[in-house]
Structures are given as structure tokens and as C-alpha cells.
Length: 94
Image (cartoon, rainbow, N blue to C red; front, side, top):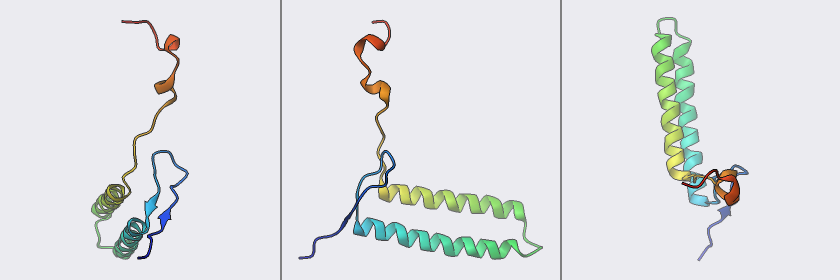
């Protein structure tokens, strides 16, 4: 049985290590997204294309792929410095 490679997390807070299949899925999504964006670039070169609606569509596609990839990577919420502040700096007691 082959052990699946675990990729180190990005040096960004909230991101954890990812399995090879997870990275493969996101990389496939990135390729699909790039093909769509190139199609939109081609449409933008046509003078009869409504550039405003094309920009709106492009934004929605980019947001969709960001959301899909976030669903796969599942970044976590992070702790902030004030979450571990000493008791005497947290303000008056209620």
C-alpha cells in the first residue's frame, strides 16, 4: 500500500498540511479556471462584446473558483494576540 504524500501547509496562518489528492484537485480547478479566463480574454478582444457584463461574469467566475478551492483546502480560523492576553489587560470585570 502506497502512503499518500502530505504537503506542508502554506506559511499563511489558518492553512494546514494537505494530502496529495487535495492538492491535485485544486490544481485541476486552477487549470479549468485558466482555460475559462483565457476564453474571456478572447471575448474581450471582440468589439461587440459588452465589456461591463464580461467583467461581471469574470468576477463571479473568479469568486466561484476561490470558494470551491477554499471548500477543498478548508482554511481554519486563527487565534489573535488578544485571545491569550493576561487577565489584568482584558478590561474591567463585569
